[in-house]
Amino acid sequence: MISNSISFIAVIALSSQVAAAPTLQERATSDPTAFTFLQRAAKLSSAAYSGCLGTAFDVTITKQIYNGFTDTNGYIGYSPTQKKISVVMRGSTTPTDFMNDADTALVTPSLSGVNFPAGVQIMKGVNDPWTSVHDSVISEVKSLLAKYPDYTLESAGHSLGGALTYISYVALAQNFPGVSITSNALAAFPIGNTAWANFGSSQNGTLNRGNNANDGVPNMYVQSPYNFQHYGIEYYSSGTAATCVQCSGERDTACSAGNGQYGVTAGHIQSFGITEGSAGCGP
Ligand SMILES: *[C@@H]1O[C@H](CO)[C@@H](O)[C@H](O)[C@H]1NC(C)=O
Image (cartoon, rainbow, N blue to C red; front, side, top):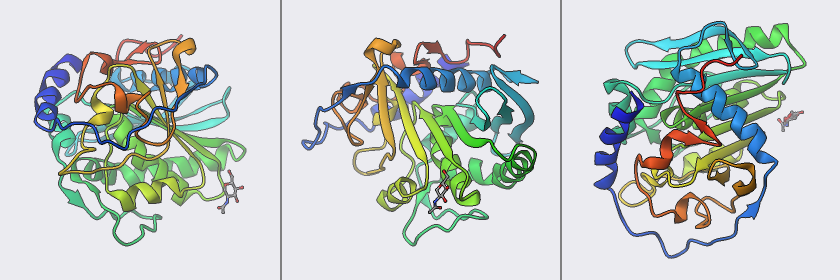
């Protein structure tokens, strides 16, 4: 299923190939410790492709995220070992998902509990899926926080799930101020304009972008005519802790911005040592 998406998105992405901007810089520093939490996020994200019931690795699943019209899928649960409440979104597997990946028309988002500044715009293909599940996600997280008041929040996902994590992070940070949040957007394409990225950066929490070597998806939509912007802290690895680096800024050429790849390429389904969709649901 994921290989279908590879050929599909590759075609779209090739049409947007443009030379890298001259302002790119190479400044990444080694960070093997980040590999551990990014690999865990990659496992949880892989579980979202597998339709896990009951548990996904250390997470006890309490609710499946699903909207049939937008074909949005994921799960919500809690991790007793990590003391986290988790919101995990699935990447692309269906024709509806692939159309969402390619639906770059900008819209002004509107979500309960989120105060978007004027000028914020994100792509319709990510806005509509998230909007269709937003209220049910917030409601489930609220009830889990009532049960586990000392837990913190996390969200994660790979590919389209990573792009959805860019927005789940903002949605959760805005709806639950005062609750610590760390999100891991894996192999995500950027989803919105500069005002959006600035709003994402300004949230009270941590958003990590976890990208794999030779994955061209993070380079999609960054060039004209889209000019979409990533936000958060990029980490980049070729599948081992020893090769894991923390990148500087959003377009560090030692990281995805410099890998010369566009769209869904060979590195896309690998994520911090995990083959997405193949890791199962845990022990
Ligand atoms: C930021 O989040 C922390 C919890 O991580 C909370 O204690 C603090 O009050 C929050 N600050 C603001 C300005 O919301």
